[in-house]
Length: 416
Image 1 (cartoon, rainbow, N blue to C red):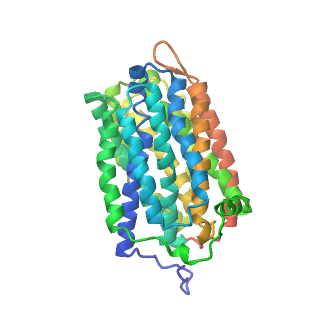
Image 2: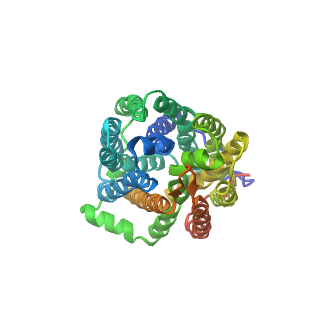
Image 3: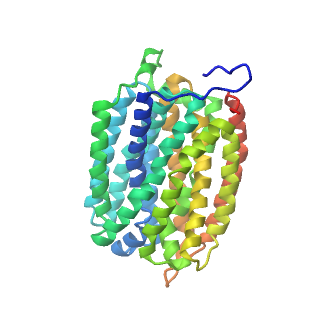
């Protein structure tokens, strides 16, 4: 940790050349993973009529990924700190590519459901390994910026991935975007295999012999339990609102399918700059303060978004941009704060359990959303605003609990 100067101002930590490469590599890896998860949401308006399925069935397809990812996270947690994190990353990434291939080949709803389960079994663990690697490579005072850059993968998936996916789906069919993910995932895996250094410093420390006891001790730690609860609350908004966003835009707001690539492109272009800025703000002004700002912004924008009627394209884009700014301003500082909680020998298990619980909670959220939403004969979604009220209530609860997480983390004083 950087030593404070005599005037109380902390010098800015500088990334090394390899650290910059590692950030770019992890961000690109996250891009392919997030794109695979996010791609199912904008394809909802195409997949549901193509497979002749209901919103409830589509919600189950989304939640299937989350539930399988949650199960694999718990299974992997006991072993997450017993291997070189690079090798662990390669193993699960190979399985993720296999699951995506099955999605590209799925011709029926049961096959798609099975493919999403396989993809979740492997893809759901990767995010936790990425966070463990980032925590191993960077000190706490740099992690806000690191998480901010890694989260740009979310925006990049909108700028590059979602418009391209919608174009491919409209040009060919809904399988085409999954083939495109495979095309970018394989090079990413090769970069990891040949250029990434081993991440195995934790193996030099004393390890618990029993994977089961390692998992049990990770779950039993009081500091961990509070973070796990907050982790479960954070993805509620995304899993409830995003799977039905395209159907809502078309059926309720009254815009055409042709406008969707524009909405995602402009939103992504705006938010691709937000991640690094939020990361810098969380390092400079404090991670909890940034989280508070993001929560309040999210609540206001969700209230507006879920109660919109027929609206002009420019307004929809503006509200969508603000919504993602709020999401980023919550997720980035939260991840940075959570990274400081576990000990070095428990980082892999902690992140695996966190990812597992997050996926389980997300799966429940998506299933609830699918049960609440009703598709009207004209294509509009009924009760979408109910989801907004649920998301706002959960956001307030997560803010209260995050205060106690903040108090438990020895965060450096914000730089002036």
